[in-house]
Length: 265
Image 1: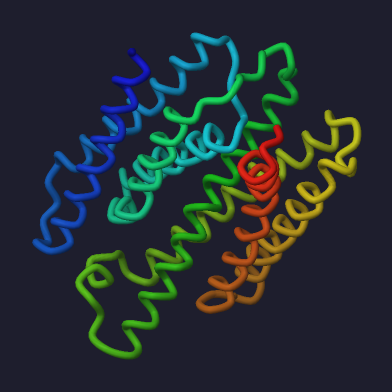
Image 2: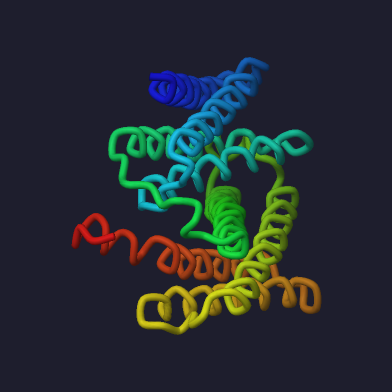
């Protein structure tokens, strides 16, 4: 019952926050209730996950539970970034996704995996992987918005939503900050994986390992290119999207096929 109440509060707050952002875009005002509701949604989402974990002394790493956890972390990171950067409008895309993932998790629960199945090292590997994916998720959204912003500024008077976004320079700066943080956690995830997982190139892990390594190479090369050669604009956008797609396939591709299509865990 508590879990249902927490999920309801979180979903309601996410959706009302989204509607508030849409209204803000139209009226060019920023009510403080928008931020309060968004934080309420995230805290309720965290409480929902913590309650389920406490009840079962375990966490389910099935498709919907993992997607819900990632969506919550992405929303939390966005709100933290919004403390000193005007990026809360990105919630118009992220908050509904978080609400949908939480709704799916609460309605399609799967057997949990006991804590004894995961050592502290494996837990650290999983959590850093999720944090890396969450940070690079925001970076991918930033890249898409940068592309739309650049296209509209060049071709015709931009729409109100594009006009309400931070400047191209500020958006690009945040993009590379998110990429740098994501690469840090992705590096830790890969190092811990090679250190603590017996065979990262086993049949059921090889695609995740290879795709994650390719994504790491793309994002790391982009950061080096930015520092040494001043890469930005289309180059940054294309590389960011390519790297994120590889991570998306690595993290969720097999889960999607095995759990939702083949109905295997």
